[in-house]
Length: 296
Image (cartoon, rainbow, N blue to C red; front, side, top):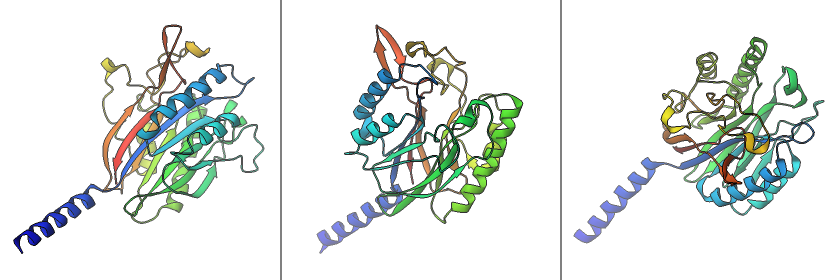
């Protein structure tokens, strides 16, 4: 009888511990700089092949991967097909009938079932961004233990001139309404992608997070200059024919809805994916991937 009670107590304690732990979500977001020629000549073939190879090596490390600037159809098809064994659920947002040269370049791969709740195309744009149908989509992911999470994937207006900053402000407002419309009780919302908001400059960042009702755990930490990875912009891009950009920029983000009290951020960091080319370490995009590990 004592043995039975001991086993029952152990089972109850284990169950409570497991329930308090919640479901795990390991997320990668990456602007892969897959612009087709002749728009860009950036060794796309070499980078595409190596990105696929590096993602294959890392596919057990993440539950969900989202990409921006995946404009090249061959890249989207190959990454979806090559990783289908681990990520059977995939979605790529199309042009939506808009008169644009390119679609939004947004792609999601998931180990768990996803349901696309909604999508939106930004109404305003400026310069080269008007060639792409930039926007956002919401993928609701069915995690283990009956947990669900909404991942909002986006790529916003680029540029730091006042006109482009103002356009981003209108996109933030459009995104806020979009997320609010699709919000569901007890389903956390996580925003991931290239927002083109440089949080290191602290100009747009506070207003954007406030308007969206989100917190940014990565951006509230002081950059560790000694690490060399305080930026989401690649520090070496000459390897594939693109001039060096200002490395002190943090345009890629993972933000969390403020109402999501039960979500614990276990880790969030810039995670370089690099190869060696002629003895030189080369980043595979002009943006570095951002990764996060959550308990929900």
